[in-house]
Amino acid sequence: MIGSPGAALGLAAVALVALCALSPGLLAPADPNEQRLLARFTPPIARTADGEFTVLGTDQLGRDILSRVIHGARTSVLIGMSAVLLAGSVGTSLGLTAGIRGGVADQLIMRLADMQFAFPFILLAITIIGVLGPSIRNIILVVGLSSWATYARVVRAETLAVRERTYVDAARSLGMSLPRIVVRHILPNVSASLIVVATFGVAGAILTEAGLSFLGLGVPLAIPSWGGMLAEGRQFVDTRYWLALSPGVALFVTVMAINLIGDALRDALDPYLQTRGTVDRF
View 1 (cartoon, one colour):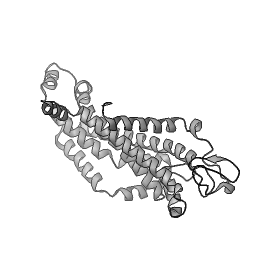
View 2 (cartoon, helix red, strand yellow):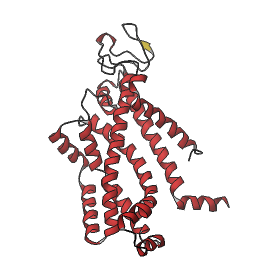
View 3 (spheres, one colour):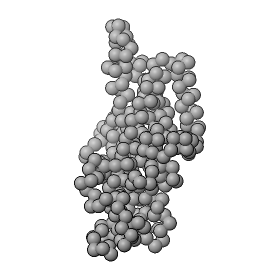
View 4 (cartoon, helix red, strand yellow):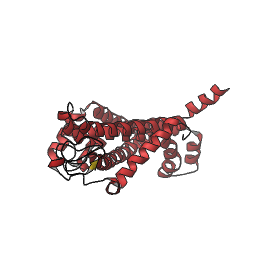
């Protein structure tokens, strides 16, 4: 996977974002919420009215944009990873149940998945955030509950294929319990597809969080987030472009990098693509 230039670039970008998310206090040059009205609207690569140098400029309240972008990485990564963990846990459990049990359980879970796909996401977001209020926890809940069905369908399809294989039949004939069969034989064979879906899911969750914050349904304003910065900067985009440009570029690079890694993982873990590549070389 590392041999792919796209994957290498993606890994480098994701490593940088992860570093920002893990240690924003060490990398950020200033407090992301510190307001200095004398320094407001300072352009990138310039000194503010009070003499401090700024790399990405300041916003309408004089807050350092670079510091807010760095701290916003923590918000995006936390929500993206947590939402995928929630959706993956729920979806994998239900997908395994549907694939192994079949019958009524399979039909019920798949109909629930169809209902989830048909339910408008923005309505779910408005309902949950309107009742519980805007917070990181509630955004994770919204994004996770809106994407579990994808994991359920993927895991169910893989489980239906794996459960018919010879080694699973052999394990049954030897008296191995169902939970042990799932852990020893089914989950390891499902994990490759699950990893790929989860990788793309992180990118989608980060983008969804930014969209919700842009619409005012995201995290509280006191917490730096890329979507919130885009929402604040859109009214100044004609004259102070840097307010929206920096978080927009950070969001684009992060999502693109994760998608590049997802593509590389899919190519590395998909046996059909590996076989086709071997045939093409001959």
